Amino acid sequence: MTMMDRVSFDDVLGTNYAPSNNERCSIKALVESMEEELSSLNQVLLPLLAKRDKLNDRILAHKTLLTPARRLLPELVSEIFTHTIPSESSQFYWGSNSGSHLLFPRPRISAAPLKLGRICRHWRQIALSSPSLWSAVDIPTNWGVEGLREWIRRAGSVTLSFNVNVHETNLDALNLLASYQKRWKDVMLYFDSSSDGRQFFQKYLDLLSRNYENLQTLDIQCTPPGWRETPIQPDIELTLGADSAPILCSLILNARKFKIIIPNTMPYLCLREINVGSDPIPTADLLAFLRHSPAVEDVNACVLYTPNSIDDIITLGNLKHLRISEIYDPAGQRLFPLEKLDLPALERLSLDVPFADDWTTPFTHTRGHQIRSLVYRSRPPLKALRIRGYGITTADIIYCTPFLRNLSCLDIEHVGISDNWDGVIQLLTAPSDGSLSGCMCPQLKEIRFGRGSHAAAPDLVIKMILSRNSVGNNKLSRVTVLSCLESDVLAHPKIKDCAENGLKFKGADDWQFGTRTE
View (spheres, rainbow, N blue to C red):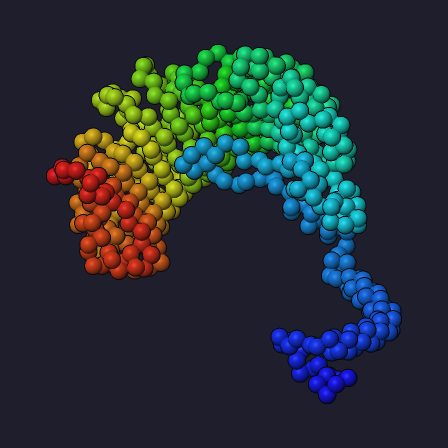
């Protein structure tokens, strides 16, 4: 080794230093020495590392025993599992036909209840031994009957809820469901609107017995439902009575040319909800429904007027929500449902009134009179009144307001051609003493008045808003008056203050308003 050769290379590590030939030999010798030392250390460390990993696994396994889930009783885990299953979307059909509101789990491994069995063996056993998890199912078309049979087997002896397409392709599944008819609870039946589809559906109904002892909800849907028009003679019929369906509480029909026959015998059905949304039901048939359902609470129906064949008044002491959609028929003396009803518990009333070309006919004016008659007769605790279309005058509104002390939402789309909103707006203006106690509809929070033939005076609208928002907690939260300019109202400084405090006002835009009629 020459004087220039290095013994240590620590000071040149990580640099561009190029070792000489002799230094290269020295470096190789150093590397071999260090590798031998590393090998010796590995022989010592590897058993310690293996011991460390094993000990870490044991620590994690023991910590798992301390997790809170381990302390849950199987019954509690089962109860928690039940809340992962979709059941019902509770929405009232206020303003639009909501259709079906039942939701059932689909047989998918990515969704409950099948997904619950993929967490761990213990929870899988709990899921399989919880009949309530398997008591409802959304049956796919062409699902193998063995899969449905296993699903029902896991449900044990509990009641069954399901929706199914009544079609020839599902014949095996339909026959299996028919064998469990006594256990049906919430049932949605779909069928095709074609002639063959309707015939097959009627044959399936005929196959069933009249025993629906556990049936609570029956939802019948026709796909596609077809257009609303004057109904023709029904070609599908189903008889339901208190003897065959003693606990049926919800009946939903969205199927044209379909008729439910209710025997005119006691005891009556205990229906809580009636929803006939797609096919117009004659008014007389609807009233017959209601007569045989004295406990009904929610009613949504598309009605067709029929000659008056009912003399007495039907009192429905539990009816809270009523929505009527009308099919206009100008011919003859007609029966309007409200004129035969006494509804002392009514909280929401919604009417969809068709446009009538001739406003001079008595038929177009009777709607307002019948609303007045209902309010005066029943004195209902109405919280929301909504009228879409035509057929009510400002005089009708003014007459009803003194009886609507609980009203919180007033939504009227149109008034008579010769009417304007000024009279109603003045009536809803609070007294000048700043107290809502002497004001009409003191609970009113939302107002919506549609367009009219005459413009509403902006100063009257402003006065109404300010008078009701000056004191108390029952302030207006939303006001819509589409017959006056929005800019005229919002320009008022005090209205701006109300808007900053949460009031939402909507009026007509300048480009929508056109020429104002004074």
